[in-house]
Length: 240
Image (cartoon, rainbow, N blue to C red; front, side, top):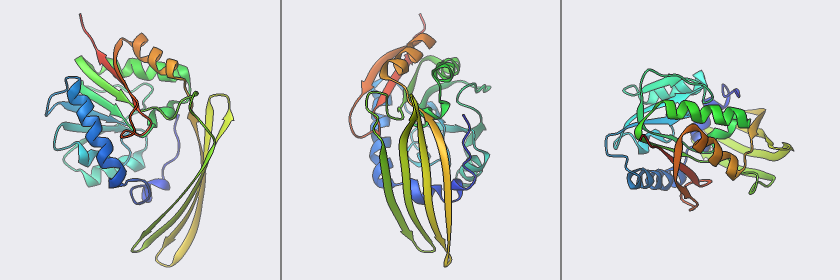
């Protein structure tokens, strides 16, 4: 599952964290959490939290903590949010000493589990850490039904930091997407080039839903609006 974010973590926020995109997405996620019974000040775990890019939009409404597999990303998150708790862990088999009222996994990060078996294991560990009536909201990294090859082009121009970004996203083999990053970094009048490839699992809608329901979650909504990147599958732990 693991992908090396050591280099990317150093400029991740400047390149990817965008208030224009993150703010409306977080607002809709909070609306969906409230709609399905998550109260204010609930214990919220942000899965695959990275550097904590989404955390500013949730920390005033919930008791937030994060989980990620990259020590480099977590180091930055801890530096930005010293009062919050961050856990080192793998989405596939994480084991923590606390349970939560809600969990969210945004930005399609669930795709890093790569295989259906790992997806199913992830859902089992999620429900094992959810309290009764706890909610999980997962945004897919595209789906088998919707995926198309694409080249992403973007740029960042900030004082002291210039980034030219091109990313080639292609179907490498059935149900495995390869994302190749080509990043030109301009820092203090020096230009460097970073290239890296990552593999991401591509699952069908039914595989997402089956993994959740077989783990013991009740699907309460499939959000298909545009405010949340990729839509969302929302499941609740129902204890009878």
